[in-house]
Length: 295
Image (cartoon, rainbow, N blue to C red; front, side, top):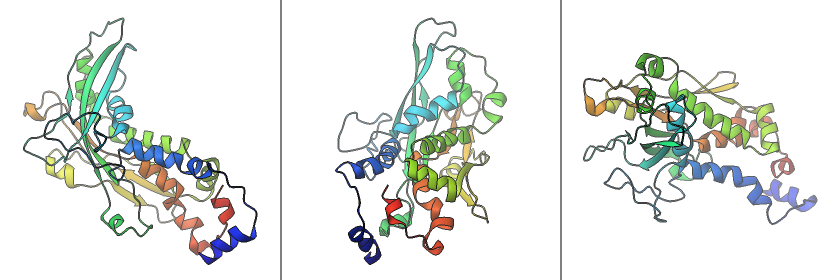
């Protein structure tokens, strides 16, 4: 602190009333997309669809409304068919009642006007225990957003497509596709200075193959997102536990799902701004350029 104050009092800085807002805006935008419980507590209502427009609690994670179910749904073969998602916060282990994702409408594959596939997803943000100590060292973003999503097969069948579960959901890494979007969003929204520092010094966040399937519900719930840093600190690989079932699954109440541990865009951008720099641009590296930090 003494060193920092010395920098401020002995050099000329061009501060403005909006400088802080400009610096932290990407972080605040990411917090809102996460539906951070630090902005407002989750609604966690009894019904599947949480109360709407209640300023005292969070309805769901806006990130899942913008990207998660849409990415999972894939190419629907007709630009007029669009997914309109409503994400809702619930404790995913709740069994009385059980909250499950839905696709509530269908579309004709040859439609010539806008047809919405109205979907519902269920999510719960999970936060690291050590953040409760408020030391400033541990991330304040969610380490994962446990998200119950309808499978690509189910969404495409609702769009009138004959979908093969092996092709739609077993091939590739659907959860990684969603999490790559979080990483791309975070990188795009970095400030120029933060981006330059991340490019030069940062441990790069990348996605690994999806883990599982953990088709026994408790296994998926309690298998956490895996963060594995390379020994040379070059990359941090994020891997998502998932579960997936075809629409023909023998337990119909559990059919047509593809659950993911979603990477919060807030966790991605917080990593790029802060945690990615520890190895190569931290205290141990003897960098003390506060003026650069304030840009």
